[in-house]
Image (tube, rainbow, N blue to C red; front, side):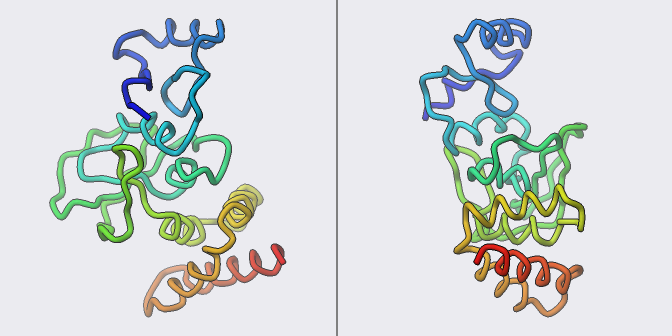
Amino acid sequence: MSSSLILHPGALLSLAELTAARIDGVLIEVGDAFMPPDLPEDAAARAASLARLLPAGHALCDASAAWVHGFGDSPPVRHRVQRVSSRRGRVRMSRHVIVHERRIGQHEVQTVGSVLVTTPLRTLTDLVLSAGDDEESATRLRTVAAAAGDLVPQARSAIAARSRMPGKHAAIARLDRLTSTTR
């Protein structure tokens, strides 16, 4: 998909104009942008809709990456990005974006369209590690496990192989519960 088909508020049209076009059925909303309704809302479209939020040298991660990969119907309220670059650059602060400065490896990211996004395995691992014991987290994990159930054992192995990791035992327990409920 061409990123020129993704319309961001303020670029060519204002938010009010784009919203009016959505109400008229000329455009649909995808993430933080708009696109023609006759195009599929695929991973590339979802990633392109978030491209403006992404600081240079960073990748979408956690729930934002899960939405891009199609593990859920709606984007998170606050997007998460993580540094890929070896150099720390200036990041413009936004209340819509949480920036993680801990660097992730190139092998844990992939390019979707023209946007860096964590791989599905890394995304699932991040979601399990950051999940709480609330119902919203449990629902998100069940949704991801249903869409990418083959990744659950791989994520468990990746987490178990790490020697020191905060929340490791709770994450493994969550993954074990996921595998027992999906059987």
